[in-house]
Amino acid sequence: MKPISKWFNSQRLVPTSDIGVDLGTANTLAYVKGEGIVLNEPSVVAVERGTKNILGVGLEAKRMLGRTPGGIQAIRPLKDGVIADVDITELMLRYFLKQVMQKRVFRIKPRVVVGVPSGITELERRAVRSSAQAAGANEVYMVAEPMAAAIGVGLPIETPRGNLVIDIGGGTTEIAVIALSGIVSDSSIRVGGDELDQCILSFLRKNYNLLIGEPTAEAIKMQIGSAMETDDEREIEVKGRDLVSGIPKMVPIHSQEIRECMREPIASIVEAVRGALEITPPELASDIVDHGIVMTGGGALIRGLGDLIAMETNLRVTMDEEPMTCVVRGTGRILDEFPKYRPVLAT
Image 1 (spheres, rainbow, N blue to C red):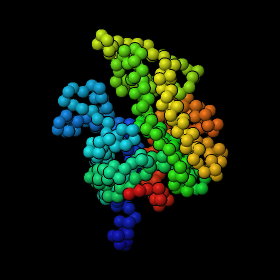
Image 2: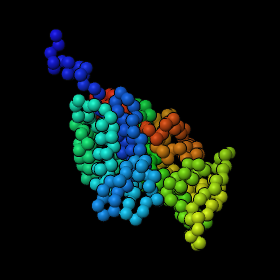
Image 3: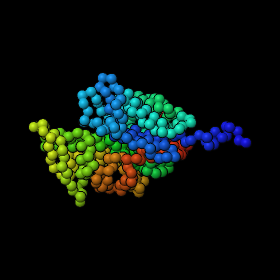
Image 4: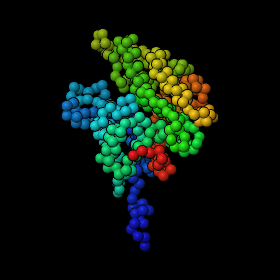
């Protein structure tokens, strides 16, 4: 008969208890080892003004953006790729982790790997660590989002070959050249999907005296936004409030107008890619010529952006089939092959 310790070590009595998290500016995703992605929620928290009592988290809170009465505030605690409100972020992460863990029986406390922005501060690291531990985590590890995205895409990050990843999130665009399980050169700018939304808001306010909310701006970006002229030019009706009369109205907007108003932030992304390439060691640069660039993140879904970067850099650009889940899938692969990827993790 096997000793009890051997039964325990064989994990026949202990279900898999590892969780991967992508703590993103726009969305938070969670991966459970053996199950896949089990949570995909907006990084939004609704709180009561004054008391800071939580009234909703995730999709429930995002539905409140721009619709709340005076006593309720919908907060996005991560801004421009950094944690703007440490306390609310801690509450949000704890809520999401508890939501994942309550639906499963973990006989032992889980190991958690969190994808975080590469420019995270020590204070923010402590907030991530303490919130995960408060939710019931045993060990907490952090991995830079471009590294996690590269692993999620399936790039051979542990080899000497140079791999260039562009991760365009809600708050930041992070460009990293990765080789031998490390980031050799990188560039990070605070331009992402949120900046494009703000450009659309400002354009409609300035040119049409039309006031719209962030969810509407995001919908316009996804429906008719593009980085270059395409064969599929579109027009949609946009509803909002007239700034002059104060009465709700609807105006037709063409994709060419949205492309023009997003030109400046998109040019910043292209310039950041060129800047990262300029500081890349020559041997790794030759690898990038051979293997091209990989685009990940929700911003990669903007029509024509990959083609524009390819045209500006003369390099082949490919995009993952599911760019929004690359980081969380990367945390999942780290959990599946933990000893192999241990060098890319920080505590």
